[in-house]
Structures are given as structure tokens and as C-alpha cells.
Amino acid sequence: MRCDLHIHSCLSPCADEDMTPYNLVAMAALKGLNLIALTDHNSARNCPAAAEVAAGMGLGFIPGMEVTTSEEIHVVCLFPSLDAALDMDALVYRHLPPIVNRPDIFGHQRVMDHQDGVLSEEPRLLINACTLSLTELPRAVQKRGGLLIPAHVTRPSGGILPILGAFPADLEADGYEHHRSDLPDPALKALRRLHSSDAHRLPDILEADAALPLPLCTPDFAGLRDFLRGRAMDLQANP
Ligand SMILES: [Zn+2]
Ligand SMILES: [Zn+2]
Image 1 (cartoon, protein in one colour):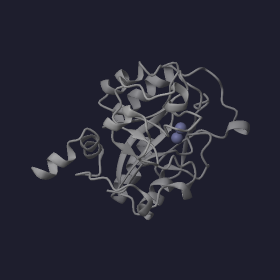
Image 2: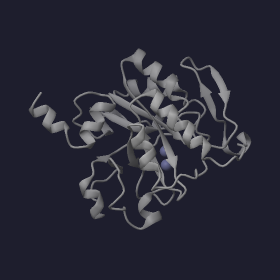
Image 3: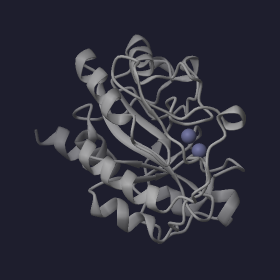
């Protein structure tokens, strides 16, 4: 399965305005991907529209968000259902500082329907750190049946390794995101690696050939969860 599990939409102020749910799903399908996740900064509110478009195009879709913890660490959180993702959205929103977005500086934050219609403009700036810490976040994600994947782990901005100095061995992560497989941190050896685009522009969504082939049994949340938790091979051996 060819997957891109870290994509932003026009709800993220830093993403292009043409990253509408319809456009990004259509582009992922055009590029030949099997499964994508929508992970806007601290919000899942464009996931319903993207899920509807994906269902119509026969593309696997996982609702999610990229949470910025109080330590300024970026963590991709993926959920088994829209309800779970939107429940997490409400929690994170309550933990976001009440700073108003300035679209002229940061960009628009648009909640869209599945046909490129604008439903609303989110007034609160979504790119700030929320007040949930890296020790609080795993419990909130697990409570909603989700997966926790620290994003772009070596990037100076938001990467867990530069910020903490090492990957915490006791962090209950389900995987990590990086484009290379040779990171020396010992705590990463027990985790599966995902390679995603972190696309903020349509051309940056991964081409199928550039995506790491993952041995998922099904292009959906359950298939990904079983792979990350090491059960994919067992399932293939014992169908
Ligand atoms: Zn990030
Ligand atoms: Zn991102």
C-alpha cells in the first residue's frame, strides 16, 4: 500500500488555499496513493469533507490532526472514526490559547464542505502550541482509540529529537515519521517508521513511487494499526 499520512488542508493557515478537501483527495488519487490521512494543525474539522470525497473516489482515508504539544513538539494523531477525531478536536481546541488569527499575516483557516464550499473561517489561530503536554497527549489519543506518531522527528521546528535531545523510551508512540531509516536513536528501533509528505501544497503530496510501500492488509485505520503494532505479517501468514 502506498500511503501519505501527513497532509494539511486550507484549514491550516500555512497551507495553500487550493488545498481544499476535494482538491487534496483528488490529487492523492491522481498520484496513485491507496491511503491518506488529513492532519491539520490542532484541528480535524476538514476531515468530514475529505472523508466524503475519499469515499466517492475509492481512496482509503484516515481522519487525524497534527497536535503541537506544550513542549512545541509536533505529533500526528490518527483516529479510527470521524467521531473520535472530532472529539479529540474539541479537546485540543479547549487547550489552545485564545489568540485570534490574522489571515493577512498567517493565512486563512477555512472549514470546507466536500464540494469546495466554505462552511466557516476558524477565528482562533491553530498553529500555536496547545497546553496538552507530551505526557498528557498519549492518554487522550488512546482514550479515543487513536495512533500517536511523532512527526518529522529531526526537524528543528517541532521535531521531538532536537527539542528533547533523545526519543523518550517511555513515550507510548505507535511509530515515528522520518524520511530516512538510519536514525541512531535506540528508542526508535522498536517502532515502525512512516514516510509522509507533510504537504502544504498540492504538488508536495507524495507520488505513489516515492511513498514507502507498507504491507497493510487493508487501506484503512485498522490495516495501519495492525502494521504499526506488528501484526500485519501474522495476519498475512494466517488469513
Ligand atoms: Zn509539523
Ligand atoms: Zn505538518
